[in-house]
Length: 554
Image (cartoon, rainbow, N blue to C red; front, side, top):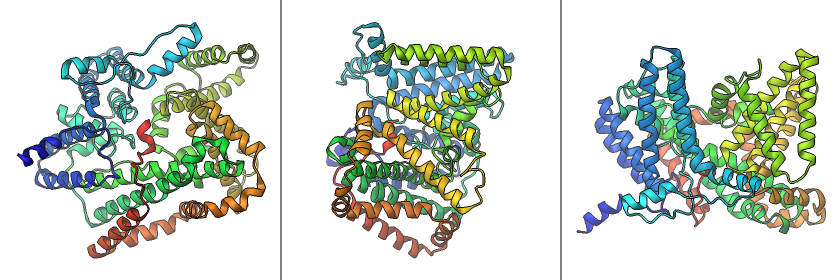
């Protein structure tokens, strides 16, 4: 009876015990997955179906009944993909792609942006519309669950797998792939558990061909996979979680209670934390997938080595940046011209900002800017291309900000990065970017880029605009130089860990490649010894409370 109860408990969802990389139960789960995988890996169809159902179980253990949303997206895009491929007329293909995008973005919009749009509509039209969770209401009636119907929870990873299903339809339309052989193969692509809830975003054209390749992991792949897993765990649990729990979370929770110096160090700390947290997750995901013979794309490339904003976004969250470029920026016209969609989106954004600003100055300035734009286009046609390029760039970054979170702070964060890219384009032929080969110029570019990106984190991390402005006020008005020595002493360990994190990050790539290969070439006993050391270190510094990965919220 006890054994039966234990087996049944494995299929129970507990919000307090999600199945994530930082929990020991995940590694027991992964060990069991690998054991069965070892029995099935030669039979590709059975292997893919097995990993699909395992991934559904993983998502259920992470997000509860939201796994039904994942199944819905899988079924819809699997069927639409077939219609796209077998349609003879280009118009029909376009309509099916449009249907796929509409359905996927509608589901994403309902769960992620319902409150955002409802609050803005209420603010604009003085209405009192309330959000109702129709999914919870249906689930309660069908399954007898007791989900609250007066609030909508965000399914973990919905932004990631939504973009993956959209890429399948678009890549099918572009002729980059052919339909998968079965619904189980497609479900495996959409839901592969290592990267399901926080990326990297995997494109159909890159991953689906791997579904039909035989399993092949050599000694180097095995060593590299272990390296990425250990590296990711150290980043997340030793670096990111330690500085967050012991310093950063306190500062951002109440910036007014801390000096300007503490707020500034909190910002630098958060830039390091969000990198270590997110890249740590993707390192682990890449390692876990590689042990099963699947290659996931690189998602980070030492982003704080970037010496300009453009270079930063080629190094940071690469799978999202490249996705937005290929599926949004270029279709809008890229750096060639504008599109009707570009102008409509600009109008919508300007309208909302004008209405919500609460002052007449914003709409007046907006109308003036639009008038100058129209006049410039009519009088100077060459100006149009420059304006179109910058509009497309700004829209891409603003929409990218909104992808990260349903709030105006995220819109501001995205727009600030767009402004940073535009300014860099205008100034890249002057110092420090004109001659990057000089060490001083390169270092100055890295310094400027890091500080700009860190400044924008105020809105990325801040709970609201008021908290962001409070932090800026503390840094600019209440720096309190006289308290710096005592603060350095009080948080000395945190600051030493932060310094070590940045130094390791800035190490030359050749050095990192050297110690990576040194680990790979260790005998199995040596790898086990390193792994034991990693887990001992993690145990010594880990927090008693569960620290979720930051990008689970996106």
